[in-house]
Image (spheres, rainbow, N blue to C red):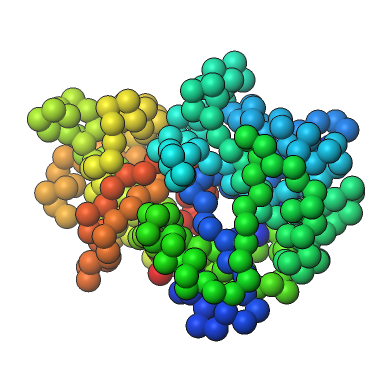
Length: 318
């Protein structure tokens, strides 16, 4: 049995003002997965320690990609639409836990495991090695395939890579200190998440019924984030869904119904009047234009449910 560590996490911030000592990678829009292979086979877990190997049979190709060597790697499972990752397509795979159905969906909605760090090699812990040494070992080790990929990294010149990410409508960049070690389970300033678009994980605290074509269905999610005083109401998210996703989210929320709002801050009366409240257990990701002066989301759009995020740790990102 392989000991799979918790992933290292990044802080959110701006592009470094000085490229010296930094390397850059594209930020992938998917599901973070730590995977390991040895003589006993494959293990793969999400950030919340969910066993995701049955959901993504494509991960079985990892053993061949590393020539059968025992390894533990860090990466992102993504679904592509053209040359861009598409989190909404990944939703079609994330919520399927049965092996047979996962194999069927893999034929129509394949995923790729984008591997960007090496944590163990042949039973040896590599986390204390500098980032560039781990990257060199990883690149030499992994034979890319249709389902396993090692992305390129760039030393310096982060601005041009960020501009390219913006032009291609990608999520952003990861800036990483070239001398940094891998710190399992820690959020470190040695890794910096630089976003092109405003995106935020939020906790669902309720929902409002739909109107018109959505009558009888969920209309909007009422979402928030944790602060010292509790769950802060951040607004309502009513776009970005298709009917199938509306129905699926409704089935997830119905068993969580509670009589009172879980928010510690006031919900506007017109919204609260028709709201159905739920226990704050479900995390979703949204894209939005900006934060208003009242601390609400402007023009939010639903991207998908995050089964790999801990709802108690969702806070407002810069």
